[in-house]
Image (tube, rainbow, N blue to C red):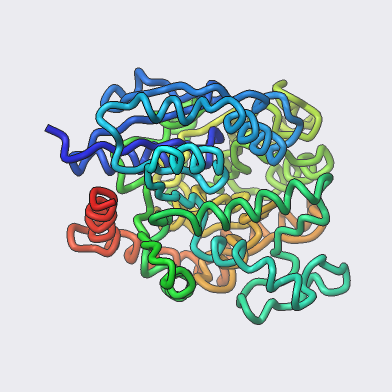
Length: 447
């Protein structure tokens, strides 16, 4: 018989859905019954997770809004107006001890509150990002925001090693009011929760976790660092992926020399300009290094859901050294002996996966928390390097050479292996992550 029942409602984007399902699996492995509430947009496949219950809720304008922020806000507005989340929660038997939600789902928190059901927040980003996003009043008060072009390299001394260029700046978005609203929502949802789960581990972000605990101590909100979730869970990356992976790349990697391949992936959501795409392509082709490049549908701005067309002559130039796939089984790729480096957009899931496998990272952050993640990789953990500024073919070639062959790259690889050991220790039977999961479950069942 299950020890208790917990419901989870993930945000329906790949970077949020995967860690939520991984958390659900970890809780189920400790004896809890699990129900997943989900939108019809990007719905998970119940057949892949027969151990969970699944309940669909209407998502209203979610698929129709033009940008990610607009989609999230439209979905919340519709769910709050329709009462669909409240109805779904009220019908669950037995009644869940709590509802685990994403910080971007205030409508779900309000629905739970109407039923007297506590909420626990899952932060799918780093502790550093949480601390940063909770500091926006201070950043405006001290004049860091709105960001001025001549101050982009200025250190934010209150949040070292962050610089002004690393900040999410709502004033630069097409609809600043919406961007500010999403920031405010994340803080309010966290403050109104009964606990906060963060996909990180103690040894990775001790000062940041200490600062968050200190800030929330007065309100009695528990902080639980239980990452890396992808290794705590038995759910592999493929089973929680919204995109189908091309496994031919594993056979290709098997034929490559150990540590020789640069793996390149810019995530599941963010697009790149056609100009940048072509500079990356020719930089890889002319680097002289073996590479595995994920070029998903819609990667280039304006290409929609179409296949991304490679530059003319690229395949001939990279023949025998490069492999291009629409999507890869990333966790398996990063753990492959042939992979010696990871060129990443610095999404938090990708960053944690790179850390766990001890792979150094060449970071090209695009937006949001990716900017802070890349800065931490370069300046705090020193397991990688930032690739900033205008992308040019020659600059890409030089960065790859330094990263994959030079003394700097060798030092990054050594530190990456040291950090890998700390990640593995956190996941050991008496490690900080395992202890935090036990405390989290006790906390949930006591609510």
